[in-house]
Image 1 (cartoon, helix red, strand yellow):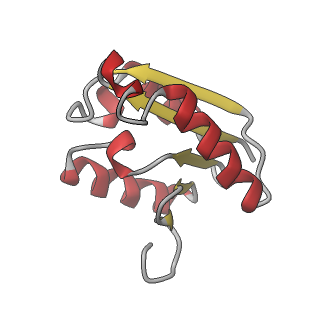
Image 2 (tube, one colour; image 1 turned 60 degrees about the horizontal axis):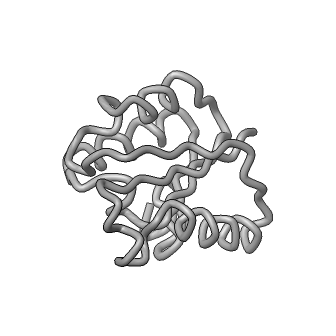
Image 3 (cartoon, one colour; image 1 turned 90 degrees about the vertical axis):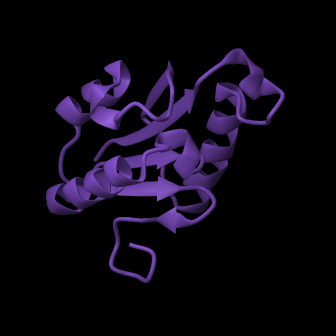
Length: 116
């Protein structure tokens, strides 16, 4: 099992908005600790959230490397995707693959509870 941190911002102004990569990583590490997880791989990129996840350079790399029981942690949905259809398709794909996707503000979205 590999636990990935995925951090994304679209511009350098994100620091002022509280969503700098450093801030995202710190919050995700705290979340991982609460869930008894350790982040093994840190994946970051500067790209618009409107770009489909698999069409992003680092998003594509994640999709090529993830396997069953892997975990991806992102700060919040807006850091992972700003395209609702793309997000829903990725969640469905992760469920089929047995990959867990977590957001620090709402938890795991690929599980069997009310959220996932």
